[in-house]
Length: 312
Ligand SMILES: C[S@@+](CC[C@H](N)C(=O)[O-])C[C@H]1O[C@@H](n2cnc3c(N)ncnc32)[C@H](O)[C@@H]1O
Image (cartoon, rainbow, N blue to C red; front, side, top):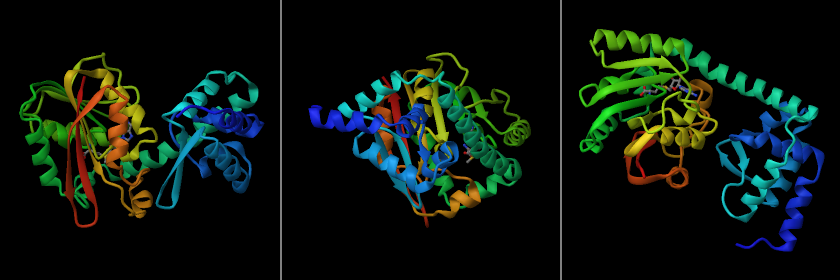
């Protein structure tokens, strides 16, 4: 749709106010909730909500509701999104006020990551029991092997490997494998599993899904098995996975479909309550990945989807 004079004016007016420009500046990457923005900007929730509403109405931000949380992100698609991105280019991040906001945002993100890290630290030993609580596990694993049957896997990367179960599953299919995880405790459990099973061509190391520290086009298969729902910027993680994939390589995402089990946030440190098919397809499409298949598996309380995308 063409940008009209009217909606250009609405968008510029929305951005042309100090707090709203500060809000926009915070959306350099990822999604944020109102509570997170309130903590960073130290203004009341009603004020921040009003600013967010104006920025959404102007088409510069988008929001989506998930259970009791609402996530906001920079608009992604169409003329207004281009306008939002252009405005972002001119934001002077070296400005003192904006710098302080960024520092507070880093603190907020750190506190959020610590919560998830603490959970994994405390639950590393029990993870294998916990992971099967909601998931038709055997069915997902069988399907992962089936859907990759024709893929020659010289190099495999398992993102958020946890206790290394995926490395074990693919140990006979892949020539070499690496599992990365942020949690040292999870990695310790993974290492001892791999040793017990005498799997020496699979290794684990500490790493971050947003910055994989691996060469471009160096992997045949990247797995995200029950990991993306912890991410605050799933699209950025998919982009990073695509970067390291060889042409024709697969990225596989196994995760929940949208659900309402809010207690997974409190009890299991989940950030997202599942992903819709449209959302995952959109991320893949704008990332040089073609969706090959989507398989839905119905669980007792929660449904799982396995998305397979191929690198162009
Ligand atoms: C649900 S658990 C393990 C899932 C594992 N793939 C499995 O199949 O059992 C998710 C893992 O993701 C890790 N994780 C969370 N955020 C991460 C990040 N930014 N980079 C790498 N790993 C991360 C956690 O430490 C945790 O071990």
